[in-house]
Amino acid sequence: MRGDKPLVPDPDHIARYIKPTQAPDRQIQATAFMLRSIDESLSVNWLEYLNCSSREHEISEIRNIYASTFRRVGANARIAVLNVGEVREKVLTETKDRRNLEVLHDPIMDEPPDPSHSGIHNLKPDDELIAELILETVLEDYPARH
Image (cartoon, rainbow, N blue to C red):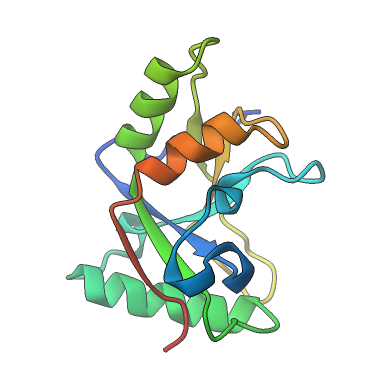
């Protein structure tokens, strides 16, 4: 799983695209953090990798990435911001199997490129408890559209 992909450091932050159906009335649901059976990791973006001067600039860059990589960014879609270390610690300490999540930098270099792309690994499909725990660590959320 890890191979040559570097770990995103615990002090850093990641952003997750939240589909409009996963955030009715701008309230993010745990389903936004559930791994689909066809995925090997939960897709996120490493904010510090963008090397921006502020959170507002990071969010603007993430919106640009979404606009270029997704066919359509929903009008009510959200961006959830999480701290890597807080997510990992919460899941490690509050799961029976002491699940050790890894957040790995996994850039996409196809067209269009997404150099900040990363993934949360060691998840299992349809793991509602872990999705709920991750939801509890959301620090901030923003509209996904400019």
